[in-house]
Image 1: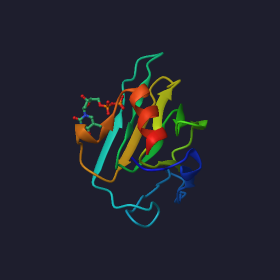
Image 2 (image 1 turned 180 degrees about the vertical axis):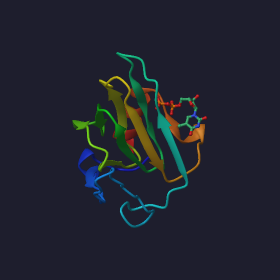
Image 3 (image 1 turned 135 degrees about the vertical axis):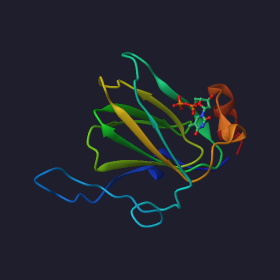
Length: 139
Ligand code: TYD
């Protein structure tokens, strides 16, 4: 697994096209974000108190956007942790592979939009935290 650190993940301010009748934010692969987008998915109808994530990816790069509402993302590289609050649709959190992530504190009606560099592949997931720590420390 990659030797990535929490500091390799960053918040990217996305362009915002203002309009009296609403705003638009466009995200182009390899332009606003450093990878080609192969998959888009979104979490919605998230019940109060629910937590998502709780895994790391071996290769997948992702950008996480609070398309509506707000939530917190905890990122962890096995040594350092950081909590990032997402609450604007024109900020995206770039999460590199080899980073454990957990999503907490979803506001009611929030939508978590995720842009991903690869199709869904269960073999790319590490879902066990102990195993994550072991792999990270021996990588
Ligand atoms: P998971 O990635 O564990 O969800 P989260 O990180 O949001 O808590 O995925 C939950 C389930 O959905 C899991 O059984 C796999 C499935 N899934 C797909 O089939 N395709 C996808 O693109 C994603 C993200 C998940």
